[in-house]
Image 1 (cartoon, one colour):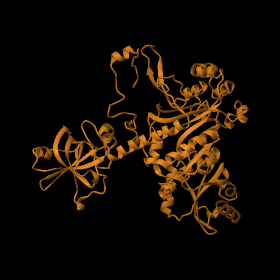
Image 2 (tube, one colour; image 1 turned 90 degrees about the vertical axis):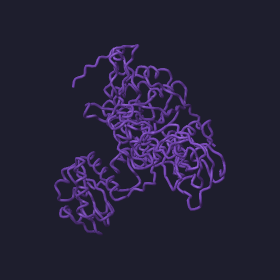
Image 3 (cartoon, helix red, strand yellow; image 1 turned 60 degrees about the vertical axis):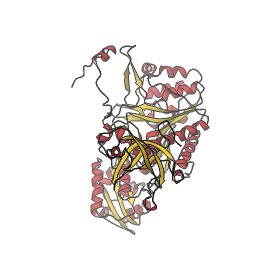
Image 4 (cartoon, rainbow, N blue to C red; image 1 turned 135 degrees about the vertical axis):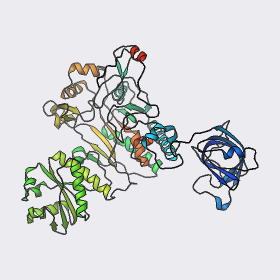
Length: 582
């Protein structure tokens, strides 16, 4: 029973057993109906809806006639059973209704600019501007409550496994690696700035040095980056770090967490351990390091067969790969997929139709009998169509990876109720950035290289593999982590490979380098994106629908109108002068 000084019950609580009880309810007017002199109100709070009946013999009946959507009211009355033919099986209180004995209008509402009783979304601008109204909608209430339940499960699991929840500061040092930092000016230290943390990465490593061997935190992180459906300037992650562990310990911990979550929220018994894919294998086989394993459509290297054809383009490129779709397509459908590749900056698709041991299509005339036989044996094709990309290896994988996803969506090959987990490991430690003309970290600069690759860092950094790992679910990277560097000499080698001078390393990471001199234990960890996780589990594609107060695609809060200009007095106090060119 949800009893307070203003109400005896919630609007989702009353049942047949409560018949003839005197109750007091508070909530919002969800809808009003006038039926033959009786006024029916659906009264709503976050727990549900109760039908309230106003009869004309009551002195407040005139007031009930004036009620409109979203008025906040308090009613007292008697619980009655509904007539058998008037029961509402769609709501938990559908067997009863409350006959009102009193009515108090706590607050009147203007006509809302969006429809709260409907599940049809208004425009993004309207929803963001009137977020306090959008959050009243059943869908949004359900999402936010579901998020709470997930976080409750996470905290319970981490506490059961002897982890300590330790808070780390929001005002930290700017150490840009990856996305841009959000900067906060310091009034008491003019000309100096704090940074909002992109993650508590270095601080959780410091906690390992401090002998807090099992740390977790459900923490807000901040990144000043371009937005899309699964990105926000501020987001939440489950941050985890452990001492004296290997990758296996991290895998076991996280698999146990997901097993518990899936059991409690979806009543699914998922199989552990999760499958594992080497980074290179994932890219070669699925065209992505975030493969969706709910469908096959694997990328097949048919370079050997292709080189035996008389098709000159096949002989000139680095590699020829294909996807085999066991389905017959019309020429119009093939052309649509060809257009898709061109929209993704590819030259276009080559294709062959397969029927038993025969091939047909524009490329068929270039295939000798031997080349055809070898091709069909390689792809195990009997009936369907082969799509070819002849390109540089990296681009061929990228294009076919996108085509794979497009085909699966277009031809409904994805089971939406399925959850396929896979660990991706053995990532490269570095990748070359054409934009910066230097090597950058694939994960972050504190990731431990494979011991056998440490000596490659100076001359062949591109060949160094890391002890980094990602957890991917249904093609979405849901978590990422690594075993960390705990020795100063290795950390310095990584900094040198990244083009970070000793002076710069000391300036940005001096406190970490110093801590490494004082008995730093081996350690590792992982971070799970809470917003993405909740959206995935609830079947949402946009993480803004599982965040109470998100920003829009332009990183603006339309409800609060932020960011906004500040007064000249505030800027003067901070010793900041605005002198930005157009």
